Length: 132
Image 1 (cartoon, rainbow, N blue to C red):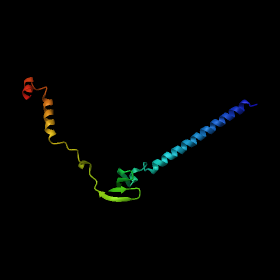
Image 2 (cartoon, helix red, strand yellow; image 1 turned 90 degrees about the vertical axis):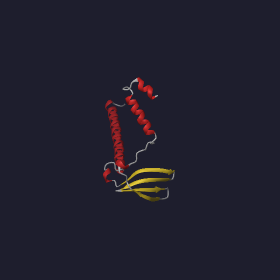
Image 3 (cartoon, rainbow, N blue to C red; image 1 turned 90 degrees about the horizontal axis):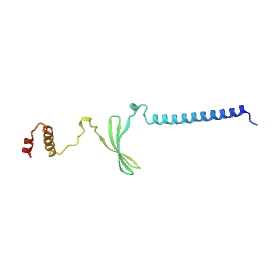
């Protein structure tokens, strides 16, 4: 026959073991998370000397990588078997980056339409009919 104090002691022992096991599992996951962040350099990005700026896949087995190593910017070709330095690229300043150009033929049309639209309420009905 099981007495009441023995049943409660068994239940508290089981709850205690489950809580301690949960704490150990949580500590393992937290340690793995911190280890991954530390290995990726997330804690001190200023110390990282080599970063991949951009990558472009050419085929499933070939890619181009733009890599910043210190102050140098390198274009590297990568295959399954080798890495090849293709060129050293001059970094562009932010203000020197090209902006998409609009066709010159469309600019006067837009400017004329905009000026007509802005002046529309100020014009009389007779002026608008004369333009047509």
